[in-house]
Image (tube, rainbow, N blue to C red; front, side):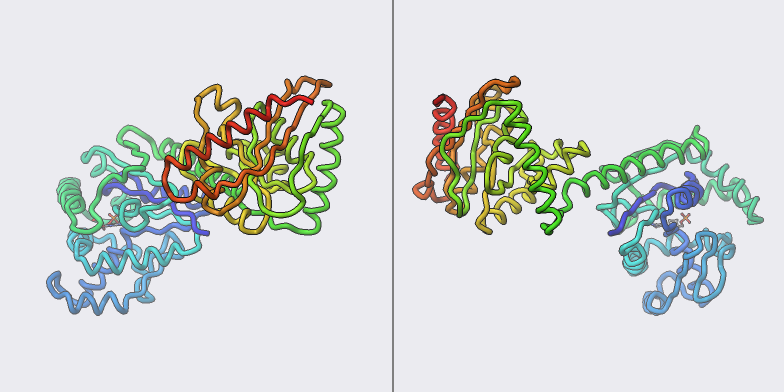
Length: 429
Ligand code: DC
C-alpha cells in the first residue's frame, strides 16, 4: 500500500530542505518533482529545443530517464546533473517549460508511477491538488517573497551558484506568477492541506510541525487498519472464541440471574433486533446464544485494544456513525447472504429511543432488501450485579409485504420492529 505526503508551495519556502530531513527521519522516499521539470528543461537546452517545438519536446519526453533514487543526486539520462539543473539558464526557463501541457502530463504520470506501492514524500507545486488529490498528508508551505529570495540567495552561494539577490527576487516573482496561472497543475492550496507560513520559522520548527502531522496520520491509518482488517475464520480462532465464550458466559451467569424466553432457530438467516440498555446487553445476546451472531457496533468500540481483540474474535461489524457506511452495509448483506445471523440495535445508540425518539431504519431496509425475517428481542433488567436480566426472543417477523424502495414503507417496518421489541421488554416471567 502506498503512503503519500505532498509538500506543495512556491519556490524558497524550504520545501526541499524540509522534505529531505523528513524523508530520512520517517524513512519516506524523497521525490523532488521540481528537479524533474528542471531535467526536462536541461535536456531541452542541451538539445537546443525551443519552447514552441512540441514535436521535439515530445521526443524528449518519450526517451527521458530521470533517476532520483539517491535524494542528493539527480541523474538525467545516465549523467549526474545535480548542480547543472540549478544553473541560471535552467532556473530562468523551467517555469515556462513546466507550463507546457505535454510536459505536465508526462511528469505527473512519472510521479504517480514512482509512488506506486511506496511510502513517499513528494515536493512540488501541484502534488496535493493534481498529481495525488487523495494524498494521505497535504502540506502547503508559504513565506513572504523577500524572505524566500533571501533563502534562495544563501542556498545558491553555498552551492557556488552565481546569481544576484535582485535577479533571484525577480525570478521568484515571475515564477510565482507563472506557477499560479498554469492551465494544468497550477500552484494553489488544496482544500484539505495544512498551510504553514514559514516566514518567521526555523527549519527545525517547520520539520517538527510537519512530522507531528505525518505521525498522527500514520497512527490514524494504523488504527483504521486495526478496526477494518478482516481476520479470517481459522480453526484457532474458532477454538479461542469457544473458550472465551465459555468463560465470559460463565461470568454472566455468576453476575446475573439470566432468564431467557424463546430462542433463535437453529438454522437460517435472521436479523436479531434488540433494545439497547447498556454495553452489557449486546454481549448477553452474543455470549448466551448457541449460534454465532455478527453484531453491528460503532467503530469507537474497536479503539480499545482488548475490545478490538474481542470484536474481531466475534466478527463484530464496525460501523461509522452519523453517515451512510457502505462498507458496513456490504458486510451485513454478505453475512445475511451466507445464511448467518446479524445483530443490530435499531435504536442506534444506548437508550436511543429515549434520547432521540427515532429508530434507525438500516435493519428494516436490509430485511426488506434481502427478504430476511427479523427476530425482535426485548431485554429487561437493571444490569446491577446479581439481579435478574430477562432476554425475551419474539417470533420472527416477515417483512415481505413492505417490499419496494419506498422510504415510508421502510419507516413503517422499522416502527413495527420497534413496537414488537418494546412489547417484549415488558415481559417478565
Ligand atoms: O521547486 P523548484 O524551484 O526546483 O521547481 C522548478 C520549477 O518547476 C518551478 O518553477 C515550478 C515547476 N514545478 C511545477 O510546475 N510543478 C511541480 N510539481 C514542481 C515544480
